[in-house]
Amino acid sequence: MTLIDKIPEDQALDSVDIWFQDEARFGQQNTTTRLWAVKGSRPRAVKPQQFINAYLFGAVCPANGNTEALVVPFSNKEGMRLHMEQISQATPTGRHSVVIMDGGVGIQRMLLMNLIMLALSNCRLIRQS
Image (tube, rainbow, N blue to C red; front, side, top):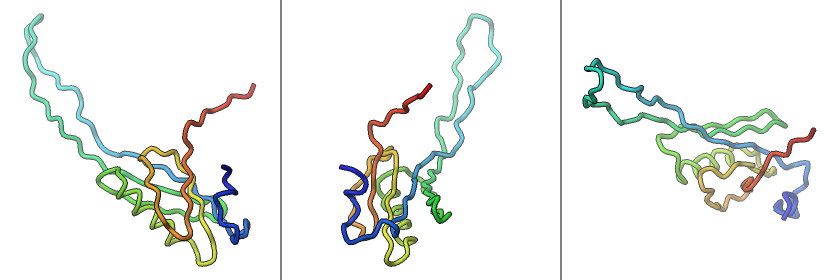
């Protein structure tokens, strides 16, 4: 099935916005713990294992320059749903949006009237020489 097949038949192609979406994790991981010890010994070193992260969901529509972003504490389906609703609300009345994404969050199919989610699964880069 091609992208054009997913767009509703009553929607003109010049009223369709193509969005590109991705997500990223921001945060800090602790560094390696070092301490002085006698050569050949293996002393115990207590190291904090907690990480503090934030996840950014972002999308851009190159045709009109619109962008939408959402920062959430977890990368899950709820965060993706909120981001897709944000893009849907940013789509003007009478227009339709197609969101192209990599499928990294395990895409949840949603029923949004003016939005199509298209996952790029099993894609490979083809090098032309």
